[in-house]
Length: 96
Image 1: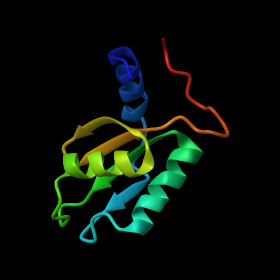
Image 2: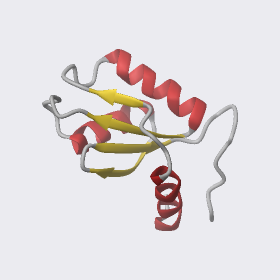
Image 3: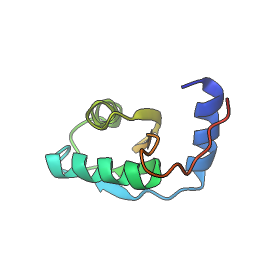
Image 4: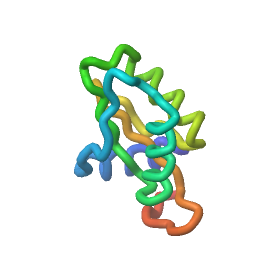
């Protein structure tokens, strides 16, 4: 992903509310599956990591990225933004 594409996705993510929260249970298979399904439906998702979570948000973003074959757009504080192009319906047109 180029820096221009990443900047474009960050701009979209600024206006997006988190659709998921990760708490004390950290990364369970159920959360990973939910993230995978959300990425397929929306392409760009924002996740809120709660304060009672023991894992670091940056580490969680990298693990989720690997497990869901997505890209980490950004991690700011306790918010993670992930992107993966949908196989069935393309919603976001990235600049070249």
